[in-house]
Image (cartoon, helix red, strand yellow):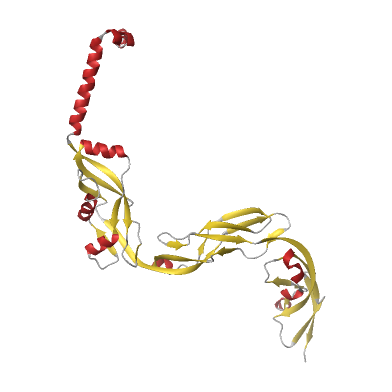
Amino acid sequence: MNKKLTEFIGYFSPENLKNDRRIIIFAVCLLIATMLWFLNALGKDYTTTLTYSVKYVNPPKNLFLANAPPSKLELNVQAHGFTLLRHKLAFSFSPIVLDLTTISQNMNQSSNEILVPSEVLIRRIGTQISKEISVNEVSPPVLSLVFDSLETKVIPVIPRVSTGFKPQFFLKGIIAAKPDSIKISGPAGILDTLTFVYTENRTFSGLEASAERILNVIHPRNTSISPEKVTVHIPVEKFTEKELTLPVKVINNPDDVELKLFPPQVSVLFLVGLSEYENVTASIFTASVDYNQVRAGDATLVVTVETQQPFIQLMKVSPNSVEYLIETNN
């Protein structure tokens, strides 16, 4: 058997093909027959499935498409083989465009949900694809379009930024976005609960000077914003050490009690931006102890130092606790 197969294959060797014209005639006839069969097959009608993407446009005035209808439709179609082959070889089709305003008017439904049946879809699809193709069925057979009232409001943008600095460099102030707010439009159900939006999350390391970066604004699905990007300003400055002496005050102190502190003052060591070094005085700090610690029976009171200035980096409070003596006012 192997010997006969080898002889058969050898019969079609290049040398035999060159010398035996019968083989060439046979191959040409086979090719012609195949082409005639293929052309005859393409002339018949066939039923197949084509997949089209869908584009939803022109929502009704002051309304918003609140749900996510199918992005693709499967069409059961019938057409000549030549037409179907041409479409298959195209690999991609223009999307089917559904005008939401026209559909909502023609469906004449008062609720915020419109159900578009297959006969309506077939009629609209048929006007957009080849006239040589007949649409039999659409899947899904019914489209659900849910509308919500469209609202617009202005809300602030919060930068979502992580920073790292070179030695002795720190954040001088607040990281801010410019513009600091955006206009957002979308369904009322979403906007009613929205009080702000974030930028994309970014990390900047090794900063040694103020920087500005353009970041995308993140917003909920089914909403649109303007602008879509903001400029985030990161104020950076070189810091140096400074030390001040602060008086310590008592908070939550009863009127009939006087608390004497030992020592009555503390020293605070901090880092401050070079541009603000000369402007920093004791007045921008508050050093305090809480009388509630006395009620708790603490032998010493912890000193808390606070400041509202963003260009201050507290390092050390000395001493960090003080002794006290209670005096009663008669």
